[in-house]
Each structure stands twice: as structure tokens, then as C-alpha cells.
Length: 117
Length: 112
Image (cartoon, rainbow over all chains, first blue to last red; front, top):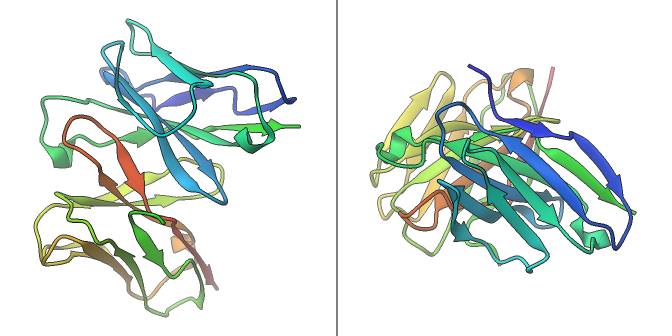
């Protein structure tokens, strides 16, 4: 069974540009969550999509947005990039519903490392 | 201030030593999770603890959930170089979805 796939693995952008990151969840998983990981702030929740709807949202500015497609694949977009957006962006997928808490495991991808110059 | 405080932040030990990592909060959680993250990879779930006072063992790793469900600990016996990595505790912020909040992490290095 293929794991969570994130593309691209590395990305270099300049301030003011926008970027789109992609996440393909494990087959059968309907929930996709996005996290930002930086040395200073650690791992922080961005948002979660379930069945093409945003179910939860973290405390990030509106420049960060996402969407989920009917096949559960998800994209996140960051507009008007700032230096502080440099981070590892992680995507996690899970069944999302209908299973016990201890079985609703989130599987993480390897991440996209974004550098903003 | 993070909701989950982990200590220590860094730990460098020799192979064969024992260690304990702590995850503390002033909030009560329905469950806590422990993850390990290796360089270039995403976090991998090690265990979920749900009952106050619960103890779970995973080979040389022992996880405990505090009686009041506000804290947890991870104890590694006879650490090996393969245990090197970033250990993260995390909790679900609500029961409607997968909104995890993470501790700051403990970076462990085990030297041969």
C-alpha cells in the first residue's frame, strides 16, 4: 500500500511569489491535514480537509489556503510569500471517521521543504 | 507558550543508557500520542494513550499517561543508535477531526 506522497520535495521561491504544494493520501483515506514545521515554532496545524470540506483550521493568515478534490488529493497554496514562510510543510492522511480514536492514525508524508529567498 | 511542554529539548547519551522524556500540560486531554521523526521524513506514530494511569510498552519503549491525563512520559531502556531522532508528543484539540497540537519535541542522539 503506497504511503502519503507529497510533491515537490524541495522548492525555492522568492518573496512575493505564490506556491502550490500537493498531497496524495493513502488510498481510502478521506481526511488530509496540513502542518507547518519550523525550528522556532515546531509543528503547527494549518488545516484539515474531509470529503472536500475544510473541517478544522489553525491560526494562520488568509495567505494560507487549501482544497481537497473528490479523489481526496489535497493542495495547499501560499500567496505573497514571506521569508518567515520558509519551513517544512507536512501532510497527513487518515480514515477520518467511523473508527475508534486509537485506530484513526494519521500517516505523514515526507514533506515539502520550502525556502523563501 | 505551548500547550504541551516537552523536556528536555535535547539529549545526547551513550548507547546502553536509559532516558526519560516528559510531556506536560495544564490542560486535560482525552488522549496523547507520541511520534518519532527522523531526518528527511515525516513523524511516525509510536503509541496513543487514552486512559489515565495507562502504561504501554513497545519493545524497549515504555509510555505512561498521567492519572489526571495532563502529562505523559516516554522511557527508553538501553538506548541504541537507531533510537536517534526527534520525539514529539501530541494531543487532539477536539473530537471533531484530526487537529493535532504538538509539543516542541525532544531531539535525541544516541552515540555508539
